[in-house]
Image: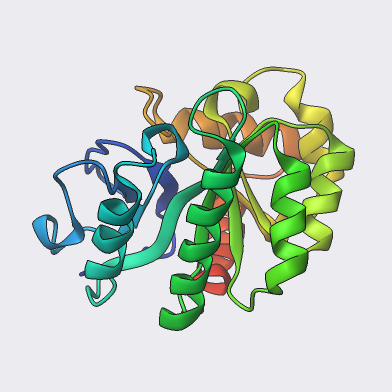
Length: 225
């Protein structure tokens, strides 16, 4: 399996990504689906229990699915996992699932991709309780500078929600953050990752090539490559 090369665009989180010239993407697979890293041997993947699709009846089954894929070399991270107060089961069940997946990530020494919606106190509480050694990535971030700095202070990385990051108002946030902890993503959208890079490079007043280099370094650091 190939890794991103200098000059590549990196799409850190996508669903149904399509290979293109000079684009490296990580496909997000979810435990409730019928897709596993085994089905995509040449594709970098993440795999986890999304809180939207978790309930008391499938909890054990989904957790077993996560444990079953930990040996695949193309599994880059656990997730997306986390909390969602707008959709999903009771917060306590989400917490149990999340903590179990953090334990798996620590055991196999791979990072975690996190989905978090209006549950930052819960996320910080788990981080404080477990003191994880593996890195955490908040995907789809669309918060303010204060929240971003709180997350960064815990050693986390941020990948910005595609629709938020292409808006003019995102520029102020981007300019305020250290560049060594950022990623870009398309998630499940049809937006071209190259368009996102163009917007962010302009906001940061750097070239697209420089942004590519920054994110490649971040990629190698996040995945300990």
